[in-house]
Amino acid sequence: MSSKPVAGRVPADPTKWSEKSQGSVAANWTTEYTDIPYKCWRCETAATFSAADQQYTYEVKKAPIDQRRILCEPCWRESLRIKAKLAEYERQWAESKETLRSNSTYLSEWLELLELLEKFVPYRHDVARKAMIRKLLGAA
Image 1 (cartoon, rainbow, N blue to C red):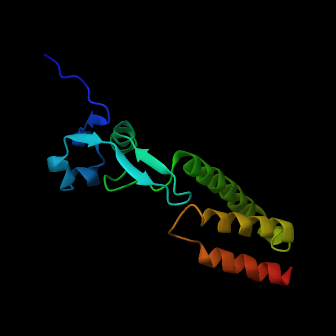
Image 2: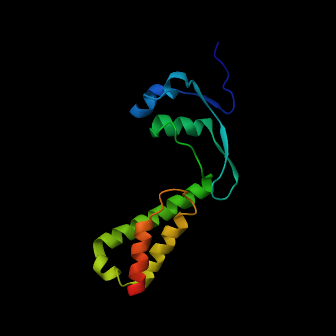
Image 3: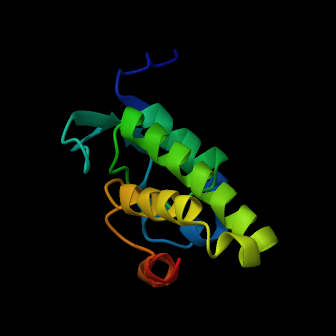
């Protein structure tokens, strides 16, 4: 007789976790994932880190087992969009630093993106990069 799936619960298989997570205490006692409600750090909307999302995050993507969600889906997608734009600015900077260092439009947009990302990520702000851009803008 098979048991019926329970909404908000999914069986866990710690043998599929990342190597580091498999060595954690949680690997010894975690048998299932359950929905975890939280409030989005940015917009304060109620959200849920679903049991199915946890299973995918830990067992397929191999994210650390102590990773938690802080952004709702729309805010997370917007943060990814900003990060992709920032990656493009970084690429352009690496290729054309000498010409871009006096381009105030480029520098202003880059600084604006860095400051916008801070509204989505409560940690690891790029203080040094922002200071460099402000200095270049002052000279431009």
